[in-house]
Structure formats: C-alpha cells, structure tokens
Amino acid sequence: MKIITVKELLDADVLCGEDQLEEEVHSACGSDMMSDVLAYVKEQGLLLTGLVNPQVIRTAEMMDMVCIVFVRAKRPSEEMIRLAEKAGIVLMSTETRMYEACGSLYVNGLNGKVVRRDG
Amino acid sequence: MAEPLVFHFDVDGSDFTSAGQASVQIKKNLRQLGLPSDIIRRVSIAMYEGEINMVIHANGGVADVIVTEDCVEIVLKDQGPGIEDVEKAMQEGYSTATSTIHSLGFGAGMGLPNMKRYSDTMEIDTVIGVGTTIRMKIYLNKDQAES
Image (cartoon, rainbow over all chains, first blue to last red; front, top):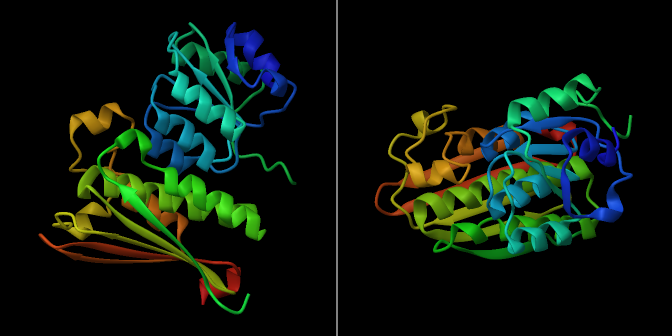
C-alpha cells in the first residue's frame, strides 16, 4: 500500500516527509508499547501509535520503518519531527482511534504479517 | 578487516528523551562499513534496548561495540544497582520499572528478552550494588552462530 493511500484512508495530516508519499509500506503494527514493537515485528513499514515521545521515532528508526501514524489526534513535538526528518520517516496524525485505524488499513489490504521487500 | 574496530559511547542516564542516541549512531557506523541490513538491525535493536535499560535502571553507563571479521560484539557496562534475579528479569513481562517508564512506552518486561532474541550469545555479569555488564554477540555468518 502506498503511504498516500494510508493518508487518504485515515484522513491524516502529513507532518513531515511529504515527498515520500509514493513509497510503499508492506505491513503495519499498532502499539503504544515500544518494546512490543521491537519484539514482534521484523520487516515492516508502518507504525500506528498513540504514544508521543522521541523514543517512538528511535524505535521506528531501529526497525527500519518508513512511516509513523499518530492516532487519536496526537501531535508530535517539533523535536520529534526533526528526528523523523533526519531519519527519513514520514509522520502523520489522524483523529481516528487505534482500533478503527488498524481495521481500516487491514481491510484495505495492509495486513500485519511479515513481507520481505527483497524477496 | 584485520584489526577489530571499536566504537565507544557514553550513555547519559539523566535524560530519557535522549536515550537511544548511541544506537542511532552505531546504526550509521555499521551502514558505512557495509554490513548486511539484517545484522545492522539486530545490533541496533539489541543495543537500543540495552541503552534504554541503562537509562531506566542504572543512571547510564558506557557502551562499546567491537566489530571483528566474524562478529559484532556489544558490551554494555553500568554502575547501577545490579539485577537481583537474572532468571526472573529474563522472563517476558517481568519488570521493575516505574509507571512513569510505562507511560513512556517501555518497562513492559521485554528489554532483556529482546536483547537475547536479537543476539546470538548474551552474557550477564551483575553484582548487587556494584553494577552490571552485558556482552552480546551477533555473528556475521549464520554457521558460526549455530556452532
């Protein structure tokens, strides 16, 4: 799924990484616990979270994720946006709640399972 | 690569928001060395969890990453309170972290288990009241990891 499709499905605002919206995400993970994100997902692209602190950006960076969506209208700080820009990660914010956001992406074809990009 | 390469980091324990900076840096360093992306990811996640642990529990410490021909070794040293029950600490879900740490997205009792998950070998040397040293190795070649 293209990042722009994620944006449209969730009616999200793009906070940084406007030029990367044509990039593909291959799977997704929704969690407020960063250690769970680090434990259970291997190769993915998108993180949905209601947690707002710089460790969210670092966690995504460690996992080579390309996009973070903040649910429940959460907004990251300027510092977080700066970190994400540096790491080449797209940040978005949506008013949609976690359950609906995950469900919407899932039924439209973005499932949570591991898909390797390099075959 | 005949001589091992050593990267040294001081992990500042006073500020949770800055935790993880060493891991971000080592990721860049290993990329520059041209290591495979899955190895880089494993090293950086293991180190990141270790760094977070040092900040949460031990008021910081030092981290060394040693890159040799056959493996990447991470050595994390702190002068914190030590781990009282290592066996318990290795169980997923066991945590002594405070609710403040939980609200920051950590302290789910996954730190040490994740470090073990992403490394090929892990040794914990801990003395109550003195500190903890953790050594993790990630082999570049799968056969060595299994032998």
